Image (cartoon, rainbow, N blue to C red; front, side, top):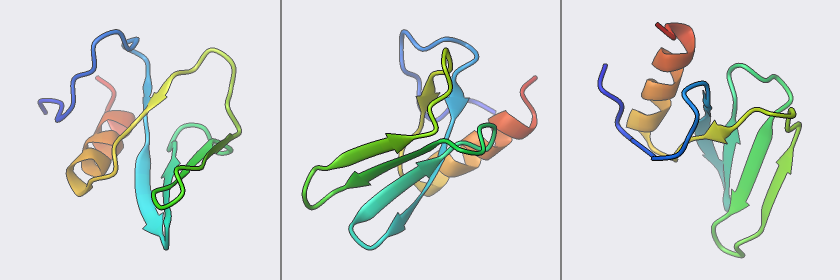
Length: 78
């Protein structure tokens, strides 16, 4: 599968997060890190992040195609 998003400078082992909306919040979660959660309030610009493990880079967008890519990459990393 060709990645939907290519971001230069990310390590090859960066974790691809999935996302969903809950009211004014866009919420990203990592399928590999059970406690990782990033929240962005699109109305106020507030961002919070919890459960960030040391040394792991997380990335992801808020779209159906990006969510499917993240699930595919994390399920079948090779």
